[in-house]
Image (cartoon, rainbow, N blue to C red; front, side, top):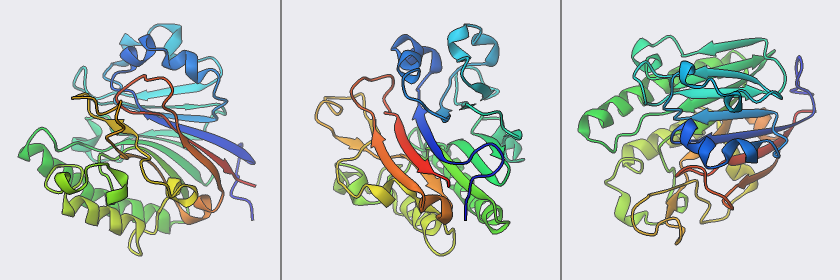
Length: 268
């Protein structure tokens, strides 16, 4: 049975990247690189820009339909999604104002297939934000389960700000009490990828290697020494995960403190 519906049938390349500022990433060559990637869908996080600050044609690649959902607060958060084929519908947010004001969810629908650019909060700035993160996690999982139970197929791309298992970060022993690798956060990932959530870490479906990281601290020589974390994901429903063909993390050039995650699917 084909998952492909509407205008998406066959091979599909999906790229996700936290840009840590879309204008900064542009200056570092992100859009010149993107031009050569033959992507069908591109999911962006942490825009740190309002739409009226993105007037340069660089931010509206002509080969894509481009959609942005910035945070209300200037210079903060924000997500975007580029689609080579025009979606049937684009949805900003999930109907939870506190979450939606921070520009953390934008979704493109193609028939029964939904692609999402998602940016979950970080709790590293202090206890207050960690509690916000826990609240988001508590509310998001039932929402995702409900969506999956309707029969929708989904690809959720983005920065989840959580490393799931010890093989997903270099210094796992020293980070067990730090945001991003707290026991409660890892337990949430267990639920997401377990019987309750029913979703799949699609990258791990085709790549079980260690040292596969997507984010590195700017402190010390973390990037040079590959002391990183895998916190950027493509999370899918099981039927989509069965159609993953390849996955890679692009690290030859740096556009951000995150690296682009590139995945190829075959929806036939």
